[in-house]
Figure 1 (spheres, one colour):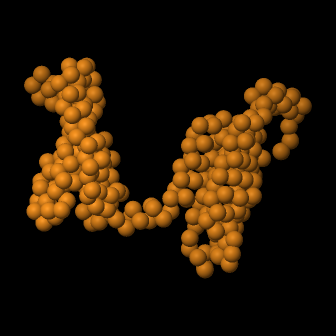
Figure 2 (cartoon, rainbow, N blue to C red):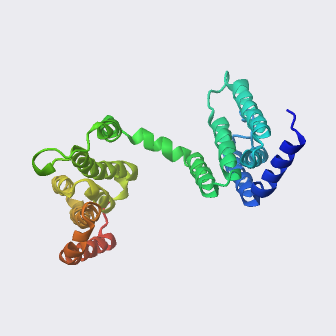
Figure 3 (cartoon, rainbow, N blue to C red):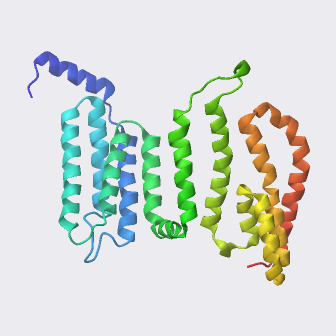
Length: 307
């Protein structure tokens, strides 16, 4: 690729004006690779007979390489940036191909690609986005055992509920017309469906949280989490359970109180989302009973000796 003297001068001026070295971006790119590399080294994936291709040093270099490529791309030197990225991606792919016949796990290689991409983003100037990507990636790697345990806790009912909610939110909602229809334009299908999704989402989050906490965390915690979905259902369940577990009656009672205490923040949050000006009129009527309910819940946390 050849440039005339004038083109070379223009390119040099562009780099001088817009391409000052982004030291912070390069640092974020490199330290992001270090964070992921430390996790890979600490978890044993970079050592031993089943070691993958990258440890803390390689990941740091990959992050720095991505940051450099992002900076070069931002300054207009797209060809060198593309060569660097292609080389890094090729090395990562080759490392996976070399071991895929013995081990199909590609977590380390995928993490390397994410580190490179985050480095490019950091080098291009989006520091916060790059930092967030690296933080989430590191968290996913560190919490491997808990995530696997969480997946094992999901039963058929939960999986079906998640799939249905996803269809309702991602497929049906965009297809519904905005409206308005009907007399005086009072029917807005998309807004009505969004309202259904809002309350369904509250119930789904409550169910999911109860699955994460597990049954062994105590009736009080179960009541608080279950109250997000349905305080009535929690109260009914605890009342029925108290017949067979007489020794846990106190814990079950406080668990039911905790579930009903969640009713007040649910109503206040729903009001704030749907009609914020109404919140200041509703707050004085719900504040005192909410404080009383949570005071009883706190008392139960001190006295309850449930499982």
